[in-house]
Image (tube, rainbow, N blue to C red; front, side, top):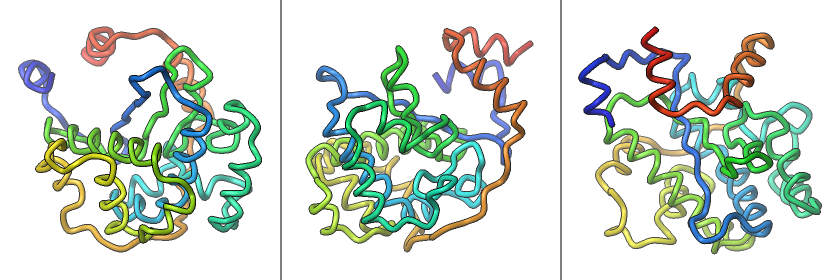
Length: 227
């Protein structure tokens, strides 16, 4: 895909660009238990993801960190876990984790035909290797969340080092595009707590929300970008 696009255009990312990865299980869809475990992993590793992405992405109003969403920014991890356990169904969990789509992990598509969880926090990519790296991270993270519960999370440190161990836990390293994944983690370490968020223009958000609901295919989007 990158080779085809590069024949007609150049990649020129800026601070307003990002990469979104949509994911859903290939074995019959999400279970409610898996979604709850994924939600807990998202909260637990929030500080690690913040250290993994550039400042523009950790502060972006288009990918607000789920743990620090409006009205819940002071909650501890344990308090978040209790809220997640208190959800009775997928709709309640969606409203808890991402009441609107502009969160780092967007659950809103679960209640639509897409049926995906969307990871919106990665920075823009300009090569297939960067793209594959973020896809590998997302898939590994979701895979591990399926088999590691809240108690098991405590075996991993909530930083970049622990996130690497978590992402690579469910699959042997030989099954990863390891070079691409390594590029994401290279020279990254530690964790980053709360950061301020860049405000989003409500009118622009509404426009983008309307566009997101349209059934565009990739060629449609490419043709629109060319015009």
